[in-house]
Image (cartoon, rainbow, N blue to C red; front, top):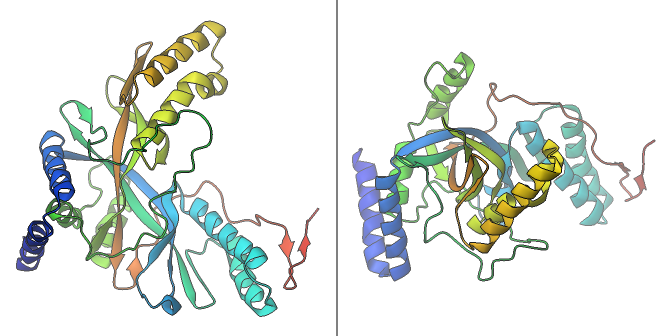
Length: 339
């Protein structure tokens, strides 16, 4: 550990003592216990989102505009494309403003651009890495101090906002000594080992040098299945443990039967398992047939360099390329639906 980092961790500890916040102390103890019970980090691969830097806001730091949850860079580019198109359509009546926004949209329609500028705002597709903690009993489940809704709804629409939205990418911000220690450990993280292609290993090692600092994003939660040899993710990253529980319940109750073509007997088995899981309340494991599912805690990091967050690497693959996503929008606000 360098002297600078030792001073940083000492300062974080001193701040924790100064605040004398019981909740912060409990969360810190929770993090220490988790590091003991789940000491290993299991990489889950890259994720992508969108960040923006707006000098006119009086803060030069980058903020997340779109959650860092997409599986490919192009999905994040499409999200930026839509954001700028709707901003041009709905947020202005000024033809010059609309023209500049649409110019950035056209770039995203024809090339895999990872950065565009419009109205003085820099927009960048950013790359993150997902990882989960592992111990002797597998993936780490939610912690007692992780956020839970006051009322756990199992039906209807869930409007829980992503904690990523507006999140400041500030490498100097840590929530406590354990978070600071984790960030210190992640600075040297790189993909190694023969199971990763050579270009992935090379890009990962290069990123440690070009983007040496790290920001840890808000924790997320997902469903994982144990198949007897390892854990496999199921579904999207959710903002709270309960959202992930709902995802698991709805999969067993309805969606998996449609997706995998269950017969009536198997459909009934999964429906009963779903209702038993729901009745258990805040359960983090479910079993059905010979399958074990667990709600697991997922952490993410974004690398930072002198010019901001790391963009996609050349080894990050896309399933498809850029395309036109929306009708033609003219500078006067007229929308033309193309044939």
